[in-house]
Structures are given as C-alpha cells and as structure tokens.
Length: 208
Ligand code: GRF
Image 1 (tube, rainbow, N blue to C red):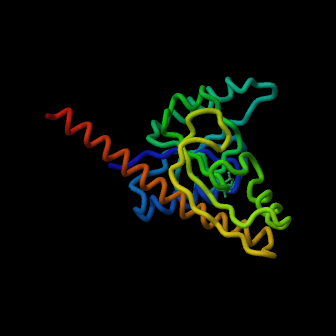
Image 2: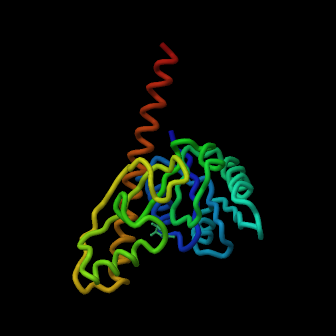
Image 3: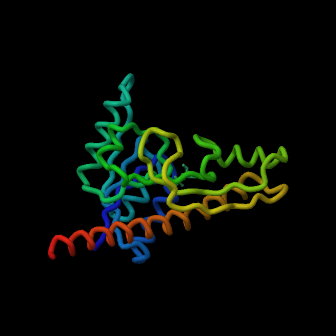
C-alpha cells in the first residue's frame, strides 16, 4: 500500500522537498498526489512541478470570508483523495470547514517545542530570547491539527534543539530547518505505518 499525501505550502518548500525525496527513495511508503499553495510564484510550486506532482494555487480573494476560502481549498485538496494532508510551511490558519473533511489526518510542522512560541517567526523569537538570556533550548514538533488552535494539537513527534551562545540567526535557523526535515519524515513514516496497521486489522476483521 502507498499512502496518498497532499502538501500545503506557502513559500520555499524545503520541507516539501524532504517529503518528495523520502517518497522517491522509498523511505516513506507514500506518494505526493498534490501540492496546494495559497501564494502564486513560490519556490515550493517549482519543486512540486520538478517532481511531476500536480499543483494548485488557491489565493484568497479580496474580502473573501475565511469560510469560503477554506471551502475552496478543501474542495481542491479533496479532489486528490489524500490519506494525509501535511501543512509544510502553510501560513494560514485553517478552520473546521477544511479540517473536518480530513479529520485526524491533517499534520502540521512547527519550529518550536509543544506549547511554546505559537504563530509566525518562532525561530526568530527563540533566537531573540536566547540572545536576551531567557532561553537555552528550542526545538521542532509535528502534530495533528484537530481544530483552529494555532500550532497546537496531539503531538506526533518532537526534537529538541539546544541553543548555542553567540550563534547567528542564520546558523540557528539552518539547524532548526535541518531538524525539521528529519523529524517530519520520521513522524510521517510512523503515522503512515500506524494507519496501515489499523487498516489491515480492520480488513482482517471484516474477512473473518
Ligand atoms: C518551516 O520552518 C515551518 O516549520 C514553518 O515555516 C517554514 C517553512 O519552510 N511553519 P519551508 O517552506 O518548508 O522551506
């Protein structure tokens, strides 16, 4: 069995690239069936196209209510019939209108430890806190997205990143991104394995 992964992006897509590479190398028993972006012209879309993956851009329209945007995005993603939806640097909050269509199958990546630094610029904020002597460690996490809570939900995997005194923001960011690329694949591999185990248990039961 091969899991069908849809990936939502907004920018560079280095985490999307980690997923594409892991699928190509059979590290993940999965295929990326589509990539959706809320922004046109981002590098993530080029990465998807280079891997032969279908893409769609769903940009918010002027004055569009959040519910309508989420319904349009939901319909575009549902067309790929994904088993898992990965938010890999997707910079919008999703409401239940989107999330309920993929219940317990939406996975988010956030560059901070559980319960810390929700929202944007988490890497920059952690670095500033360390420079001010208020932080010695940060990390990255992968979690399920059950509802509108920002960077919050059942945790699938965590990796701590120790902060180094006098490290530049660029160097710290590079170490955080490297940690993300590893953790995201580990978390997805375990998530997909569990989903397959549950499915085969179910089909075995149905056959008996
Ligand atoms: C990552 O740090 C992710 O955790 C955050 O946005 C960044 C996206 O990076 N939410 P990329 O687009 O995958 O390179």
